[in-house]
Image 1 (tube, rainbow, N blue to C red):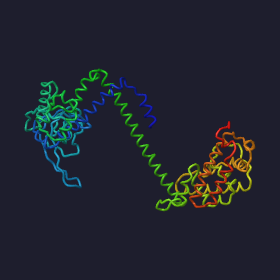
Image 2: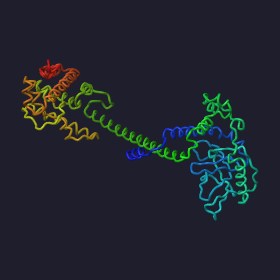
Image 3: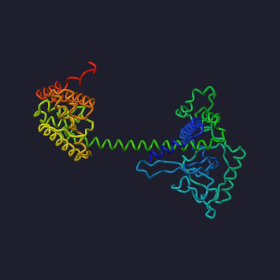
Image 4: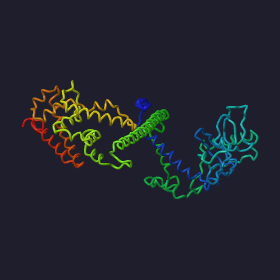
Amino acid sequence: ELNELRSEHSVVQVEDEESVESYHQIRLCLEDLVAQQWQYIRRPQYIVPFLQPGRLVKVSTEACDYGWGAVINLKKRLRTDRSSAPESFYLIDCLLASTSNKATPMGNEESSDSRSATSASEPNSIVAEVIPIRMDCVVEISAVRLVVPKDLRAREARAGVLNAIDKVKTRMGGALPPLDPVDDMHITDAKFIEINGKVKAFEERLHHHWSVSYTHLFEERLHHHWLHDDPRLPDLLKQYAKKEQLHKRIEQLTQTLGSKVSLIQMEELTARKRVLRRLNFVSEHDVIELKGCVACEITSADELLLTELLFDGVFNRLPSEHIAALLSCFVFEERASEMPKLTKELSDALRTLQDTARRIARISNECRLKVDEDSYVDSFKPHVMDVVYAWTRGASFAQVCAMTDLFEGTIIRTLRMLEELLRQMANAARTIGSATLEAKFNEAIEKLKRDIVFAASLYL
């Protein structure tokens, strides 16, 4: 789904996208600032004194825009359905133009009274209806008040109020004058003033009028934007909105995918900690034990398996040449055509390594850390054990190259990686406190590090 959305997003092309985006951003800022202003305007101490019968208000919900209507009555109610203390709220009986199939803003609240009626014989016609609305459904409040009849039970009386609203809108050019939040409603809250004061760069230009607010600033910017009167604007905004919606969906899916990956990683981490406890690398309280400290010294190969072999005494029983040959299984990464012929000692050491690897794989699976046992064992490749054994016993580079079909560069790289692993194993032996074993690893390094393999340059 994520890939499909990304493909669809890349296909959507918006003409003059940068200009459309700037216009869209201005519009978003305007909407956000209007929302901030109305958080103050809708406070009961400011708006309630102006909700007298006949006051014209504009009503809108997420589902429907009802347009302008007239306040009929204001009721204060007590919400008692909460577990906390009772909370008061206001319901506004408002006469609105509605249709019989249109959901009311307070569909699940108490109805107004017998004045609220819809014609069943006209299921989809526009009717005048008194509807109880919440305070947050009021999106504009006008300075205009009408004289409304006291009895609105008759359909004609309600229709007459709607006709009066239409006449007022026509007389005023379709735009009803709003109540001034500062001069008329006397909102002097410090935060409200702070919002208006955020346009310091434009204060001189707008002469500190009460309308010095982001709202009017962005309205001005919208009207002066070169796209504002462009006939293509509605289509361009629709295209950009579609692309923006796809972008947001992509971000949501990416975030969801990231959280699921994090959950998987957390489950894997928990499983790995179980493995470490089973192998006694850490205690039950996740305190690092001696085996854990030894494993920390090894970074260039499988530290769990090497530490297990170290504590099982496998390296104590082997001479330095055999140790180097066995450790080559951890650093050789190439593919070889055939298995080498190994001596009995090397074969026994290899079998011990493979048995220990199988045990670790089984413990991992028991701890719900999925490990393919055969793949894990096969990852330790013995294809250069005979080459390393011969090299540590003094064979020339030409002789060891003749023993295998590997490239010379592969042999050199493997021997150099092996030297680094031997140094780490010597440090691990020192951590245990075994001077004898440390001396064995150092001896293997001395036998390994010689001739052209470790020369600084081939021309020396």
